[in-house]
Length: 61
Image (tube, rainbow, N blue to C red; front, side, top):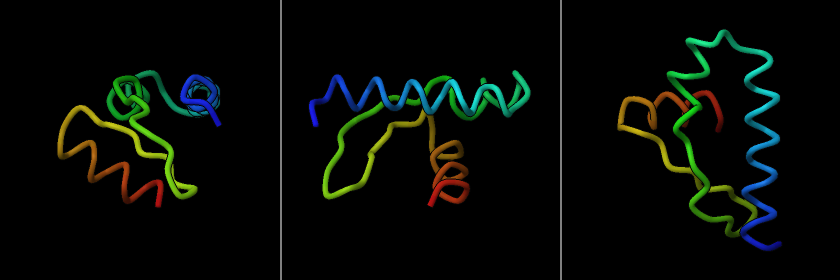
């Protein structure tokens, strides 16, 4: 799978998440995430800080 396809997929996932969360929750936890790579069936994303990273790792195992 090409990196552009993975980014597109992540953006679709973000749109779905955005519909389910309040604007404040989405902006706090997801709006600044970015795809870093897809390797060994794992999607690696970057988060804006350690607190957000830890929260996301616990909510999305």
